[in-house]
Every structure is written in C-alpha cells, then in structure tokens.
Image (cartoon, rainbow, N blue to C red; front, side):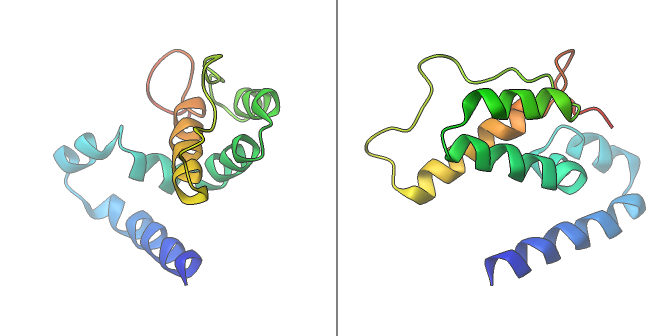
Length: 109
C-alpha cells in the first residue's frame, strides 16, 4: 500500500509540475519532493545501501549517478535507540543529501 501511494504521489507531482507557476516551481526546486520526483530510484538505491551498512558503496553509487557523494561523517550511523523505520528515514534523508551535486545543493539534472 505504501509503495502504491508513494508512486501515485510522485507520479501526480511529476504531471502537475509543468503546469505550476514559475514562482511555485522556484520554491519547490530545492525540496526533497522535487529530488524524489526527479531522482527517486537513485535516492532509494543509495538509501538501501546505507540502511544495509554499505557506506562506502553508497558514496560511490552517489558519485557515479550524478551526486557529489559527500558521504556521511565518520560519526554517522545507526543510533541504538532507532527502530527500523527511524533508521530508514535517516538513511533516506542522507541519501537525498548524497545524491545532490558536489558543487551545490541541487541534484544534477
């Protein structure tokens, strides 16, 4: 159910984006929603590598797919208090950051 809902939201956003006024698109340009809409598969793949503990592979994946890499700092990792859902959320947010280009905040398009 979550997968279907996620796909519907991203698909609907992609369809509506070209119809949105320029000022709205400008505000969305650096949002996580825009990143996921345009590079969702790469972000999910990078997040899954992080979730599994493959930090070096996630960094290389990000670099090889248009991101700056910018892997997590040495102190980054799973907090013992994190349940799987919180850990997955943290991995997804880190993957989104890693998939952004090294020269700026925006993903390479």
